[in-house]
Length: 269
Image 1: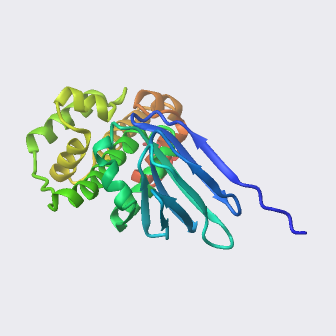
Image 2: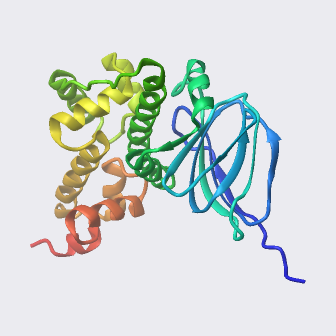
Image 3: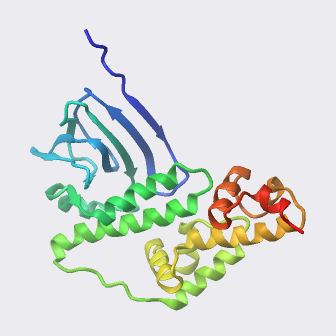
């Protein structure tokens, strides 16, 4: 008799406001019984497919679909292919999606939106990397905004218009510059500037052509270059420029400069 493949799972609670849990899993035969969550379930399937019932209606999750299951509504889940499924899940609290959106989510939990699918995958990537909390916050803000647009459009029948806001963008840039070393949570920036995090990201990206987290990282790398040329070690530079450790600095430095901080330092004349 062939051995039954054991589930492969990982779960953690990131330091990102609104994310209750991140859950990655590969199941071959396991089937979820009917159950409920007290949080929103944002699900993407990377391999295989899931078959589930929500509110007594059957649904499925092919690769190009983002599935959003509302809180407090019973659902189950089982493999829809012989080799099971591999999924990535975010559990979100009501700070990103309110209870008024539960009804529209029940009516259509599976969203065929390639842009949203890409953004959710990018969000998982950011959540998996230590030191990239601002990037994760920024990506989560845009994911939440797009989810709300989908759900509200069903009842309102209209799309939202995003207008440029250069004054807000400049204020956020100045705030990021002030917190280059110690960092800034997007939620804190929103409270200081009296703006929703998603609007902050949208305004900044429209004005400067890149999201806030990329701006902050590029500024930190620029400062790191100067300190390395002053003869300081990569470990010292990482601590002085807001990176969580030397590996975090190395990853971003090599991406933006093309070489590691150590090699860059040795090249100085």
